[in-house]
Length: 302
Image 1: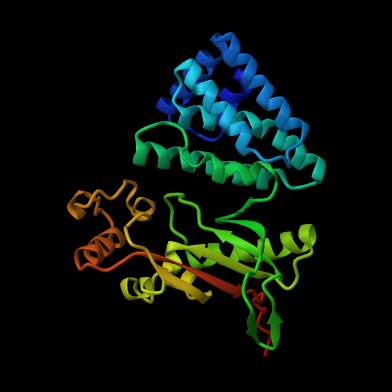
Image 2 (image 1 turned 90 degrees about the vertical axis):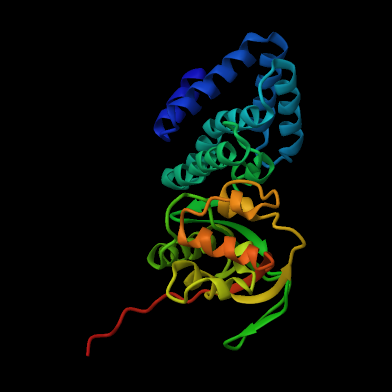
């Protein structure tokens, strides 16, 4: 397993400091007889049934962390990386392209970066959110991430009448550090439409998204020419609610908001715009939208 972990960290280009921290933590767990035995037991239970509720396994790993002096965020990420080996076997058995496994597992590194920036630890503080990848219910498809869902609302458009129980495809926007350009988003939606039609029989492809990005007032901040504006306006916003505090500020600024806006990094135009938004006493929030996907038709020759 240590060899697999080292190869994984190398393959996904983890920073050297992160690789050293993770492998040192793994060695500490292995040096503890009870911790090592518990770690192996957690992996066996996962491999026996990947559809199981993974929260109890994460709770057991938290106990391993406490008993071995490893930070719980680091221990959780180690467990998920170790689980990825069996997950790859499951992809192969299911006939799913290995590149989808690779793109999905990239989120572990993105969450590692996020955890280091926000909490100062090499690990992840959202292991429970990552769990659906390991149940083969969430997939990274090019630039975006998707999972089977239910619409949750009555919705009518273009003569199509949908109910709350209509199968849908939930959309997540990962923190990659890169831009979400229109072409990349379009290619991701197109790939997801085909993938979920084949694997889950979801047709027509109805995408939903619940995110701070879909808060209605965001359109007052963003330029209509921006990539984020283009992404948001793909969706018909079915609900939008204001939040009391800037609890999602870390998603944009890579640090928790403590009440002093000047302590937030303002090194991009987007961050500067949202910092000004906070200074003006405006609120953050979240929205829920639906996007009835229609593939672009190639132009016919004249």
